Length: 202
Image: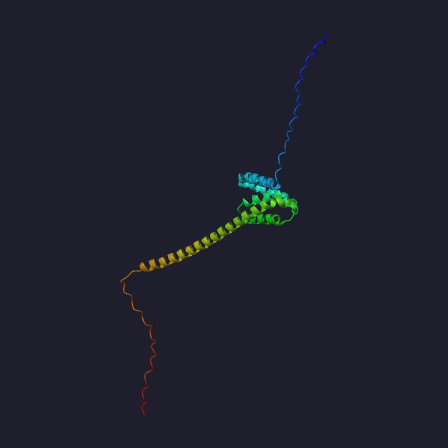
């Protein structure tokens, strides 16, 4: 008697793929702005702020910044110094413009690393302030020349009016009236000599 046939082997299950590893999402932190960029943004925003101030409010702001700079004259924060220089340049005043130049020049010439982000702005603002001072000086010279010219014209008008007055007075004199000849000075008459004495009788 033959042995029963063996059962067919069961099909092997398909291979199970290993789960894919989760994707790692790398979130990069936003790049920090450069210090020079931050300085530029701050000064531009400050310029927009003071541009809308009234003259009185601008004067109060200058007083506030002056107090902050005067408190630390040798180590004033560069942002405050530039803000003060920018505010002074809005005054269009000879003394204020000169003060702004005096504030900016040390920053542009300094080798301190903490001032490096502010130096491009200081050079830009200094160039603007120097050009403003040049134009204002030219306007002042032109105004002085105009005042001198006006004074000269006024003096010429006064002389012209004086000449016209003399001409009118000469024209108003009566004409055709004979003028009496000038009488010569009288010649003094010499005293009469006494009559000769009569001869005496002998």
